[in-house]
Amino acid sequence: MNNSYWLNTAPPFTAPTVELPAHTEMVILGAGIMGCALAYWLARAGKTPLVLERNAHPAGGATGRNGGLHVAGPGGAPYHRWADRAAARAIMQLTLRNRELLEEILEREAIQANYKRVGFMHLAQAHEAAELKALAQALNEDGFAAHWLERAEAEKKLGTSLGERYLGAVLKPDDGQFHSARYAFGVAEAARNLGARLAFSTPAQAVEPGPGGRSWLIHTPRGQCVAEQVIIALNAWAGELFPELTQTIAPTRGHIILTAPVNFTLTPWEANDDWDYGRQLETGQILLGGRRNTQPDLDLGCAPAPGENAPPLEPSVVEALAQIAPQLFPALKDVPIVQAWSGAMAFTSDWQPLAGQWPGRAGLWVLAGFSGHGMPFSLVLPQAIAAQLTGTAGEAIPSAFAPERFLKA
Ligand SMILES: Cc1cc2nc3c(=O)[nH]c(=O)nc-3n(C[C@H](O)[C@H](O)[C@H](O)COP(=O)(O)OP(=O)(O)OC[C@H]3O[C@@H](n4cnc5c(N)ncnc54)[C@H](O)[C@@H]3O)c2cc1C
Image (cartoon, rainbow, N blue to C red; front, side, top):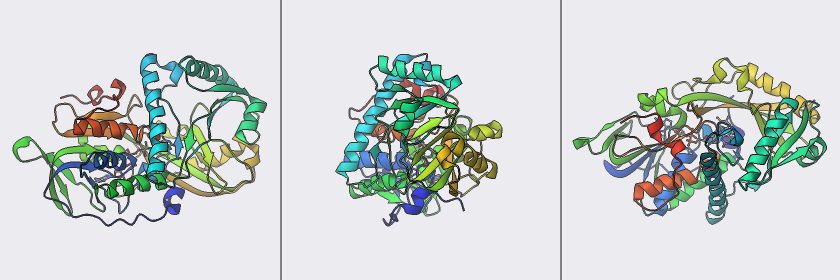
């Protein structure tokens, strides 16, 4: 079975699906967190966006199968390695704004997502120590919290002993974690309560220029719908509907395993040249993800089969994750692995998402390609796109996310 903890344990999402209108102003394709959050912001602005989702509930894709980590900062190259430091700083600030929005929206909409700021640790082997110290220094220079901890201090903060190869860690004290499906379901429910229309079990089958060339015609098994604006929030599935995006956004497999509960408290972490990561669940279980580096081509291009929510589980990666668990934390030595699942990430070649209008195609927007790092953008980018769609003031979207870098008019 390839089921995620999050989807297994979230209260069922029970909202009824809506009828398809023949014509509407805005259609969002996909009800992952990006589609749900965009619907939320549009509905808060008085719009009634229609969301088309092929599953019977939100978050069936990457959103409901991820690590549930909210780690501030740009994806891709580490912060101190960005040639354009001002761009890295702007993205960092955007993710901190996302954290503010997250805390605000969870409270305002009474979403019980077990969110907590618990900190995040970059564990260092000897060959990584200098780089990680440089990371902390660069973050500090720009006014962001991070500090180096020697091994004993790192173990104290982490909550357990480190494997012998780790000699310290950088701690970012304000990063957080949550229950991914509870979060997405809550945002979807809030969007619905505000007037967004959620059409589940309604896959978009094709999108083509509509009558007169100034709108978009969407085909679904439940009928057709013409929309003035269409927003592609399909992440790993974007290329299925828009073949031009197959060159730009590569579906990419990620794996996660879960241990039985342990009797210590573990701070979330990343390790082994950033290939592996993990955290603890509210049940006391430890979640470990990664080991993509054991796979040919890093599992880039490994997509879900048609109609599936995740690529198939690869037993050798599950085994590799099980093997590194006690190497990271010796206390995990005899703790059984009780669950494993996979999910579909969506990588671009520069590991930055596409967020904005499709150049030269009036009314078509892209919000996809999150490259395994979508949660710290999951409210702020949808809010910025909603502002552009409604012609109101909003956060500036970094030029590093401009669709123009891949899509030509
Ligand atoms: C194993 C794993 C671990 C991860 N861990 C983290 C983490 O800890 N922190 C972090 O920041 N990020 C993490 N990520 C990445 C994060 O989950 C994504 O960046 C984020 O969920 C992207 O959200 P989305 O809404 O763009 O995509 P998705 O959640 O994938 O949503 C796309 C939606 O489109 C729907 N869809 C597909 N085709 C159609 C169609 N034809 N018509 C209608 N609907 C369709 C799908 O069913 C799906 O609901 C992880 C991802 C994976 C897979």
